Length: 106
Length: 120
Image (cartoon, rainbow over all chains, first blue to last red; front, side, top):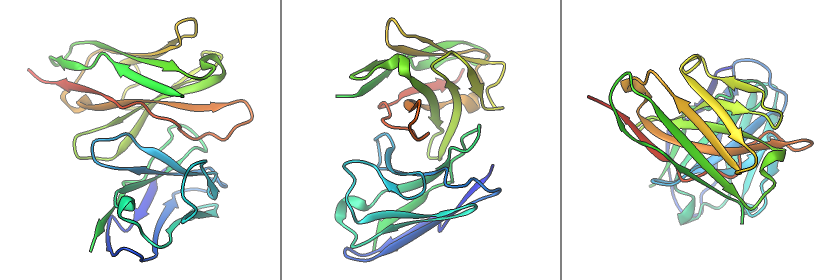
């Protein structure tokens, strides 16, 4: 299953609302997870099952979608949100990731 | 606290072998699926292997036949035996906790990673 994220990079300002999309090459129900990775650190789980927010993750992060099309929304961007975001399907092995979306400060 | 700590990375010549370890603590290791994921330099994430709590394994095509995942539940440790290493296996290798029965198949948490460099 191929996962395609868009955009590959994105510039935004503090306080902006950002939407990142992820498309699967076949239907994966809601077996879609989102991770955040900052330089030099391991990925961190943000959203699982397409829309469930992991414990400890700020409520400004939300996810939606099912089947093949998914979105990650970040409301009111904070300085600590500038990072790279990856979607991942956990419907079947190999558990493929999207290519990443690098979110940069405008 | 739930923690995963990888070790065993290093510099190895093409065709050589390495064994990575991932020491787990803070949770019932034997109840969880475990995964290895790698990140090539400046690139994205690639899932490479999974081992279930019953020992069933799965591999990415890119490593099948060369890498072997295993676990020692008595030692709370996950392993990745890597043979016939190639230059394009160079990267940062993460272990990650997967699902347990009745929970969602997502990866959380991840270790800090161990660096593998394959070069002559």
